[in-house]
Image (cartoon, rainbow, N blue to C red):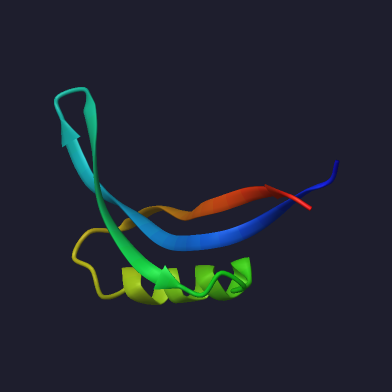
Length: 73
């Protein structure tokens, strides 16, 4: 039995540095949906850094969120 994966949904999440609240680090995030499933990681990162340049807070982390369906072949 072979199992194949089908990328159904890809989202781009920017985590922004909101500073400190006492000893707790504050992370604010923005998520962009409807990303093409076949986009390369380098291209997605380039777009993320460009979008981060438009934000007031500095970029902390870039995440690629994927939903993958597993099916028997």
